[in-house]
Image 1 (tube, rainbow, N blue to C red):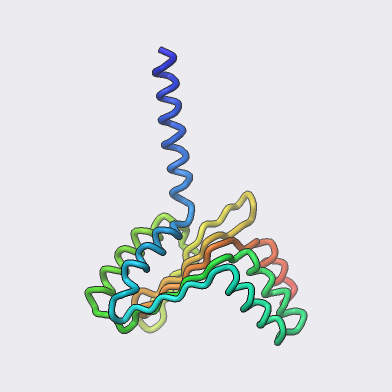
Image 2 (spheres, helix red, strand yellow):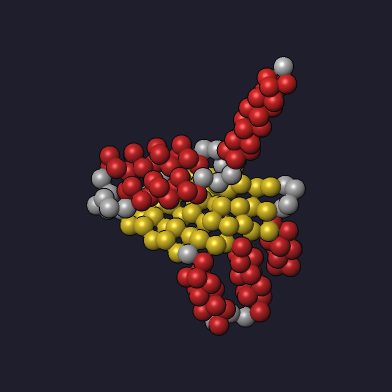
Length: 167
């Protein structure tokens, strides 16, 4: 009997941990999809790692005043960025890519959706209300053929403080 209880508890633990992980950003899955398509005509993929982002922040700070530097510090938790431009790809590839991306980001929170003249921009991420962290954002523009993925986190309390100072 103990074996069955132990097996059931182990099974429940695996199930609940996989459910919790489902809300985690599927950044690796997005990267795999982009790697699959990046060799195709019309797909351009740029990956920026921690060192490249750090260098870009450092260079940007040289040209900024103190307020702008403070705003830039909000993004210090972002560790990687991937930019995908597939505006000029074949229609079949675009539709296939969009469908695969939607499957992956569908488990994330839709933070904002904007439609303008037929074009849609959607921003997804994972918000943890307990820690106040927004992690792994994805900006998806399916009709325009664009995707930007940010790996890492942003402290939303810092964003709120900066926004209140800007008033």
